[in-house]
Every structure is written in structure tokens, then in C-alpha cells.
Image (cartoon, rainbow, N blue to C red):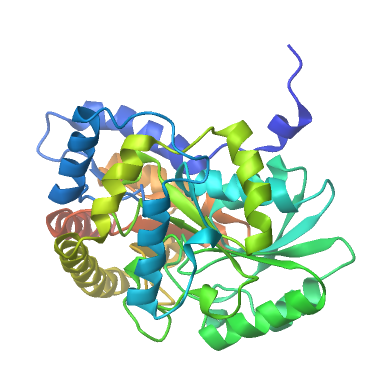
Length: 397
């Protein structure tokens, strides 16, 4: 059977490949006193809060399970618009909001609508691997621009200007970012958008972790810049609805019918039950619970990162959002005779019974030195993980 060149261009999602290996080893350790701890997947350990679960059950009981509009329930689009107004003091009209089958569908729709074969999109290195594959799947080319800790592992206007060529279509950013948890400073983001706009390009920004910002300096939506910025968001992270597969896209008004036409053909509509459930995300009781959970994620970050630093797993930039720690494992690994983060991750599984993600997925700019820890797990798991890492280092010494 002949496989398309498009499919062949898509590399494995190594996060999931590592997760499969961790699950296999976990079965071996299941009945020991040290079962596998999973700090490798970016999934909140919280599930949808009570009002959201109840809303889903009501929808099922009421038979509200038929197709909706391809761009989502009008009422849900209005609720999302209200969230931007109340949380970020930004007016985002509901007519510019398209509800999607997760942020993945939002990215796919945006790329298919805007990228021609051969177009290039600039992304930071490191960055979330699937984002570059959405570009590739639309027959474009993702160009990874190396970044440094001094730049918060984010693109700058100067780097965008330097990397721009006649084939460049725009930028695909993420703020806060996976794997680093760092955001782009608002003033720098404005400058990036100015560079892109002057060249007739597009600014796509993944804001799925925006609700999990811990610093008001960075916790602002790019939609405050102008109505030409395209934002991707999701109910997975802040709203704790990962498996419900629901997200949204904010686009210029003229682009809505284009996205709608694509969505009608590719997805029919987002999950109806998930949409009715998501309406309850914006109730005051639910928002209060989400804010309590956000404070818990911040407390985990504040405890865990100093512990990593003390172990020699230095986190060069403290994340201002999301639930990740991008740690340099080279010094720690050198003491153990481990050459790179890929080997380090697999040795951590075997020796410390701890699943983490090697930097290989996220680019090539020194990613062989870095591993990503997810702090979406419980504080008890984080504390046990630190003890295991400390014990591993002590035995090796």
C-alpha cells in the first residue's frame, strides 16, 4: 500500500511513544512499593467540576445530542465572549468565535484556511510538536527558529524579521508555551504582530494555557492587540475537560464563513454533549472552582521548581503559566553517565520509576539537554518524585 508523502512527513509524537513505554514498565512495577509516577503527560489531574458533569447528564437525558451548527452553539459562543470580557477586559464578539472539536481541530482549520502548499510558518524552537505538524499537514513548512532562556524560549520581533523570507506566511506562537510554560511579553507580542502585519502575514497564537497564567504581566490575551490576530483556545487545560474534545478559534469576522465551510465538511460539528456541558464552565460556582485549582497548580510550581534546581535539574526560566518545568538534565545526567535527555528519560523510568518527557519532541535547539516535567499531577506525587530522583542520584554517586 502506498502511503502519502504528507503522512510520511509527520514524525511520531514522542510524548505518546514514551508514554507507551512507561505504561509497559508500569505494569511490571504495579505490585511493588514504587509504582510508576507519571509526570510526562500534560493533563490536569482534576476532572470537570460538578456543574459541568451535571450539565452533560441533563443534555443526555433531554436528548440534546443532535448536530449543532458547525461553528457551535450560539449560546456557548456568547458565553466565551463574556469570559473574555470579564476575565481579560477585551471585547471579542461572539460572531468571531468558532467552537471546534478541541484546539487540534482549531489549528487544523486555521492552517487549512490560510496556508498554501510551500508556505512557511515561523515557530519557536522549542515548541509543541503537533503545531508544526498541522502546518505540514496543510502542505506548508514549519520553520523552527532557535530561542534561548534569555528570550524566555519565545520568538522576538527581531528574530521574526531576520527569519522572514519570500515564502514566509506568518508565525505560529504559543503563550504560555508547551513545553516551557513561558509567555511572550505583551509589548513584544505587539511588535511581532506589527512585523507580521507589515508583510501581509498572519499571526496565529495558541492560547490554550492562558487561563493558567500566574503572572498578570503575561496573563493577557493577544486578542487585545487587534481583530486580525487569530487565537486558538481549548476547554482542556484551564477548564479541565481534556477528553471532552472541545475548543474554539477566534478569527477576523471575514474568515468565519471560510472556517465554517471547512468545519461543515471535516467535522460536521463539535460534540453536542460537550458543548452543553461547557456552558456550565462559566457559572460563578465553576469559575470559583477553576480559580481554586489554578492556585493549586501555582503552589505545585512554587514548590517543585526549587526542588529540581536543588537536585541539579536547573529550570532556566520559571514558568509563568501552564503546568510544566523545562529542566536542563545535562549536569544531573553527567554524574550518572547519561549522555542526553532521551536516555535520561528512559533511565528515570527504569531506576526511579518516574515517567517524564525528553526534549526530542519539541525541536532541536539544545533540546537534547532538556526534559519536561508535568506538574499537573498531585503534590503527593511531586514530593515522591523528588525523593526518588534524590535517591537515584545518591545511589549512583
